[in-house]
Length: 488
Image 1 (cartoon, rainbow, N blue to C red):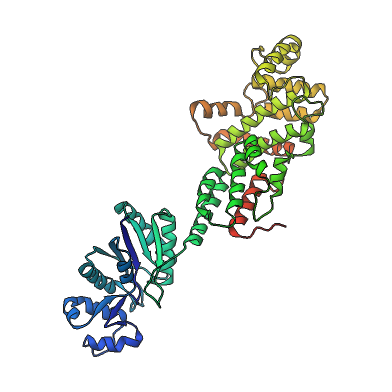
Image 2: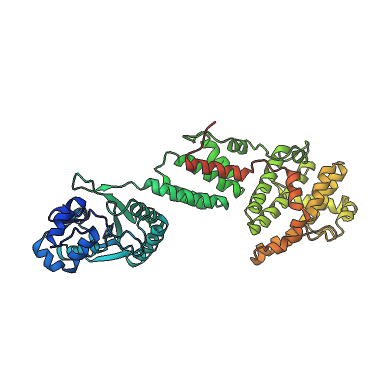
């Protein structure tokens, strides 16, 4: 593959009669240039470049370090030399801009390779300025030289220049689009520089940003670039768990993770993962008791687990101010709660046999519970709609003399547009606008909802565990990335 050499220039990249242009040789080289005073690096290189054709006949000018790249990497078809020209800095005596021009002249003449000089005019030790500069340059080069691979010389310029260029390359370029090489002082070979630690820091920051917004799928995709890391497997499992959990994919966690229960290779399996696999509800005891003991579909704790997990998803989206996802998740929770609650206290399994048992329940509601239902829900019973499910759920709670359940279901009714006398904000209508019209949610639409205190009441009824399940997962991932996770 064709490649382009990128080189920051330092004071060791040009030899004059086989000598470096440093303090030890300054008098000697200044004498060669017929100067009556000792010149500094910038002055020497400027004077040479001003009469380069003439000086090339009198003294030997040759690249240092860069020539090793050009001799060993025969597929290099262009060279980009970065020379410093600190126009607003007091100390400019070591600037390499004229050295860059000299080397460009030599390379094009000797190696017949096109060479570009890129001028850097800011402080060569300012990391912020350097990162901006390299990011901008790499973007331009990536567009201009899309078919090339970049070879970075890691032996030139200040320490800040070298690190900033490598960090920017990791961020801008794909890991297969560039390589970094270093030339040891004591031999004429090139050593491939492992960029993994740079990559790990950059990818870790990106992963942290993604998981803060609940984007575990995106983080999992980025995680692949850390496959050399000893904690890669454990990080992969945590992100995969988050991906399935926030998507309400219970079965996927069972099939993918439960059989690999012991695959954490460095850290212990976090307790919250074990709790999830064991379907241990993280809600309040009162919420668990809503589902009673005489159950048809599954144990009460399982109903409490599934519905509270749905609420945790909604609550997390609210915490990160993703209102559209919050409304969708909250609507799913409300709909699921009624199905689980009714299934817990009747002979109908609306969770697993919704169509069959739902039809039977609807007939029974029309025949046996019509008057009682219409006292709560004054509409004709036509279908097993959510408002009808809420009405029947309240009827069950009243018959059970369960004041806690009655209050909770009435709280849910305050979010349903069919209950006009009770409704504060019609979450169901907002949800339908999202699902059917593609409309996002504005904060102004939920002003009354938030002012009413309903979100806090829901938290109290269900019992959000502390720390929050998703914040706990995120802090575990963040600790792992920082290397500060402990098994105790």
